Amino acid sequence: MATSSDSKTDDWSDDPSPDADASGKGYAKRGPISRFTVLRALAETRAWWRDGVIADLDHVATIERVRGESLLTSRYIFMTAMSAGIAILGLLLSSPAVVIGAMLLSPLMNPIIGTGFSLATGDADWLRRCGKALVAGSLFAIFFCALIVFFSPLQTVTTEIAARTRPNLFDLLVALFSALAGSYAVIRGREGTIVGVAIATALMPPLAVVGFGLATMNWTVFGGALGLFITNLVTIGLTAAVMARLYGFQSDLTHRQSRLQSVVIVAVFIALAVPLGFSLRTIAWEANGQRIVNQEVSDAFTDRARVDQPIVNWDADPITVSASVFTPEFRADADQEVSRRLERRLGREVLVTIDQFQVGTDPGAAEQAALAQARAREAAEASERQIADLAQNLALLAGVERSDVMLDRESRRAQAVAQPLEGLTLSGYRELERRLERSTPGWTVELRPPLAPLPDITVGEEGLDADNAIRLALVGWAARRTGVRVTLTGSEANIATLVAALGDDAAHVDTQVSGRGSRVATAWSTAASAGNQ
Image (cartoon, rainbow, N blue to C red; front, side, top):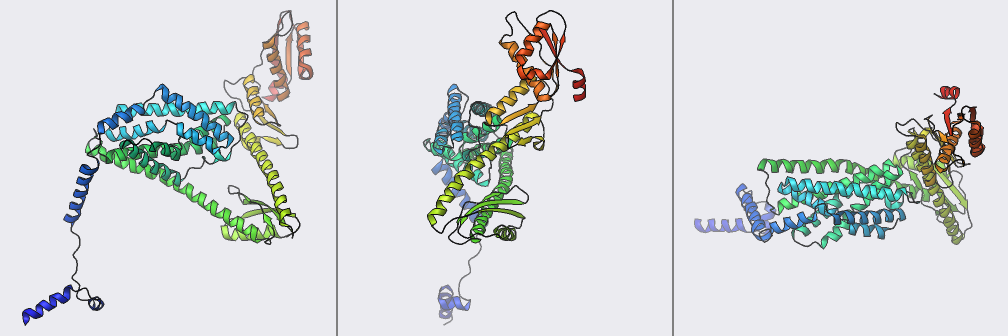
């Protein structure tokens, strides 16, 4: 009976019945998984990975293939130039299709992947040659794009350009996933996948935007695009190194060096992720804020009103919101009401300006009025961006603060006093003025140069040749821009020739007859020059 009782008890203990569960008794307790079990599972996984996944890889052939495609060659430079040219033209035209074409042609992925493999294998010579190819290709692309932009009549920051000036954490994740796919494709000999990776990471367009920022001296665009390119480059290179090590590519590094390399890779990823995470947080806050602004402006009017997309300046203090509303019912307190609501929801001071246009109750009338207003606003925004760029560029050329640039919107005139720059002559200042004026049609740019030395002028028997006519025009321009008189010293006949050639600018010169040679000396009037200094 005891044996039977014990048997029943044992049977009851192993029976997973509801009653046993409810009583809290009866289930046999499972012990914790032992450390030996975990180690054995890890060992079996490593053996499977070694024998079942990477055993069939031809490591030597893969290394030679990657090495051959990642070095500096004439084909690499040519394809870089073609890709850069297509990219910058697509960006200037704001054409996504053209930009995608540049991504497909870009050969920059190859030396970046090569950099990752050379890091993993510890091949210092290969790493140096990949770095050389990357630096040469990147600099060539930047300067080639800058040259195209410099001679282009289109120098406006388009939506395609602006989209590549604010890197964030999502850009790092895109580069990470693309690098994983690209490295796998290279290791497994499926290079066709690289086409999709090239489009995803978009290495060439950020470089083209860097060239745009350099040519237009827009350092915000320059820095943002450069940050995006560096994010993609570093992420792809380090991910390729991790993948190469994971797939068993032999390394000449010691165990300690490999561990140090792993620590550095993790540290670099963290260093990239932190600021990009803050950038993403800011972008997300602004996107949510834009949604709130749209909602509050719409709620302030009836359902029959048509509200255009409000424009928000998040960098202003206070935040500024401007919107256009086409409504059959005019609301005098709309600005104040929307401002109070937005301040409560956003937690910051907000200045709201709503332009209300009273239209009939017919929805079609509101649609037509909104379309006309959108066109007018688009033209006004383009003009404002052009004016802002003009003021910023003029301040950079003059070496002064933005607030020191004078803008006359009615007469469309921009003025600044240039600071002396070592090695820059009067002709250099004039060329800077001309260049900026060409980039802003319809505006007159006046850059007042410092009192640099004036060129002497030679009058031939047949009068002024082309070179001396240019020198005389430069003298007249300098006197007109500075407001300081210039003294011409030479023979009476030669001075008369120069005064006649100066035309209206002759009012800014003094004359001093001396000698009979063909040369006429030019100098700033002593008293005026001393007073100006």
